[in-house]
Structure formats: structure tokens, C-alpha cells
Image: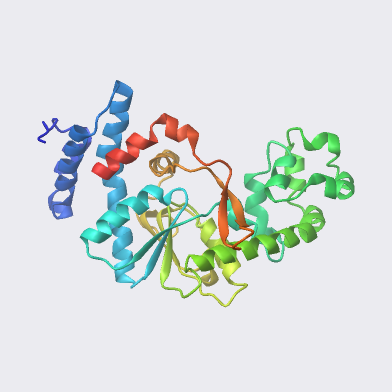
Length: 342
């Protein structure tokens, strides 16, 4: 079937001017974008905007990033790339197509991960270094939320919480700045530490069972792939692996803003920008972060943890819901279809 190619839009026209600087890759991407726009059907003006964005912006951006990922795997002789949920869903699809074209022998896998599912198992000592980010991110709108996400029930901590001024009546209302400081205090950490360490130990056992089945524990010839922006999941993974005779691999990101550089956390490298290494654009780009995360939205629900099947003891991921309804209803299937056509 022959398709009538549309005229270049502003993004494609810009790509066409970058031929010499990219060895001809940018004009090829511009042509791929025009062909994708001509071959993917859009049933409404709104759908056409989603399709054109996917073909002209998302396609070149993510394919460029994926080519870099495969280049890194080849350069560092990595045997496995683990694409972390949920940002890694579309990246893995692209990587499998491009790796076949490049005749690369690299195991490309999807790995279930989330801040809670990996962050709690990474709590070994129960100090602020291990869990401050969990409390900071989830310290609102009330105390019940961070306790629930940490796997703790406020009823088990009633007496201690009351002594800290966090009475039952106040736990379900909006936190004050003073309350936020209280839950990061030594007294609060001392109160929850025994409960948290016990909960983390069991969750760590399940996570290690899952990672072992995925082949991650066999050696360090792998990298985890994520969008960014601080490498928190990599740090959590390193803390979990430090409890075992298992080596930590590397992390490959679209961008890094600030991150821990402790050798025990493994190396971290970024494709587009690395603020600590003065690589790529250095100005604040909050809109870019949101844009890339929209591009890499996944179709599944949030990972809450892992559980073992009773008959087989096989560890399986547990999702809050099977589908990511908001983005699927918004138009994610059309976005993914267009990028794959690109």
C-alpha cells in the first residue's frame, strides 16, 4: 500500500537541517516521522495531535536514547539490560527492534520496580539515610499515608505517636510544617525502626527471590535502565544486594540531576544531561522532566510489592491495579503505536 507523505512539519523541518552533524541520521528520522504520520490513523483532531507528537518528537527522542543504551551495552560488554517498570515499557519495545537490526546479542528484560517495592526492602539499619526520601515524598497529606506506604499500621504505634504529639485525631488531617519535621526526627525513627526492619526483612526476601529468577544476581555484567532523575531505585537495589554475595551493576538514564556517587551504588551514566558531571544542558528543566515521563508512561498499574505463590513459591509482582487507566484512556495506545511505526 502506498501512502501520500504529508509535508514536513516544524519538527521534521528542523531535523532535516541537522544532516551533517548527525551523519544523516536526523534527516532519516524526519522521513520516518512523515511516514509514521501518514500510516497511523487518527480519528479526531485530538488524536492527530497525539499521533503527530509521537511521530515527530517522541520517536526521535526515544529512539536516540535507545540507540545510546545499546551503544553503552556494546561498549561495556554488558550481557543484560533491565528496563525498569513502568518507564521502560516502550523503551524495551524499541530496544528489541533496534538490537535485532544491529545484530546485538544482549538479553533485554523488563524488571518490575517502584520506590515502595524496592525502597522498603532496602531498609537494613532503619536510619534516615535509608528512608528519608520515603518520608519526604509521602509525608502528606496526613500521617496515615506514609505509615501505610511503609507497611506500618498506626494502631501498633499509638502510645509512641501520642507522646510525639501525633494524636489519633491529628493523624488523618493535613500535616503542619512542625509535623513534617517530627516524622523525620530521631524520636520518630526510633519508634518505627523495629517494626520497619522486621517488615523490610520479609519484603527483601521476596524481592531477592524475584531478582534471582530474573538472573540479576548472577554477575555484574548488566545495567538497569530508567528515565531519571536521581538514581534512587539504583541506590535501593545496591543496598539490597549488599546483604547478599551479589555484585551491583550500572545504571543508564535519560538524565541525572543530583545523585549519590558512592561506589557501592554502582556507576551512573546519562544520555541527555548530567548536572553533576556538567554534561549536556545544565539549566533547570522541570517541563522536560514531565514531558519525558509522559513519553515513557506505562500501560500497567503501580507496583506495590511482591508475593510468593503458595503452590510453587514463585515470586510474582503485585500491582495496585492491572491497567494504568488514566493514560490508556488519554491515548497511550495511539502514542505507542505511532512510536513503534516510527
